Amino acid sequence: MLRSMFAVLCLLAVWSGAGNAEPNSTYLLSPGDVVMVSVWQEDSLRQEATVLPDGSITFPLAGRIEVAGLDVTAVEKQVAAKLEKFLPDPNVSVVVKSIAGNLVYVQGKVIKPGPVQMAGPTAVLQALSMSGGLDKFADESEIKVVRGTGTSQKILPVRYKDLVSGRDMSTNIQLQAGDTLVVP
Image (cartoon, rainbow, N blue to C red; front, side):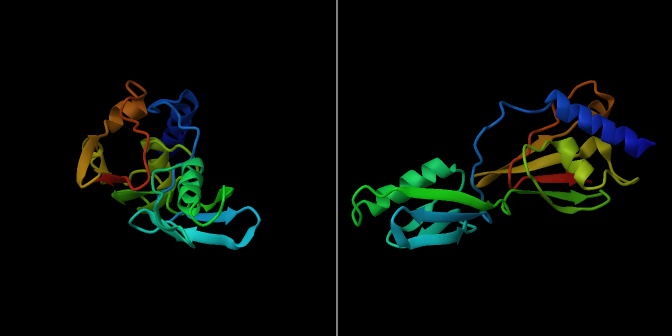
């Protein structure tokens, strides 16, 4: 009964858009993602590349390119700019082949802790649901999101009881790739 009620509340949160900031219409690359980069009429310049942990890819003639946090249009422009000294007006295409880097991590007292693949916008309640929900020993009052912000980390508290009661959805935080949801 409690789990089915939790699932219904998660769906309501998704349908109402609660906890969502302005939706981002473009996908931003993360380490672990795979892209196919190609240059029109240059068969030798077609390569699949995995975004490395440092946020970069390498491409023939262009070298190392920082791509984490960028959409494919921005990556196309960066690759083209680096290729201009070798090719006149290169027409670059970048296609996302895998969103393997679009992960959040759920740790602690949930039924299935571990990485959670985000196929689209994902909020706290959705990630908890994908992790099987809280186990019976979870401390609902101490749930938090740990978010890396450059060289530091930010702790975002989650008021779980407010979320499941529907009183206040403001802490149903929209998760970002690399976030860790901690359930003590």
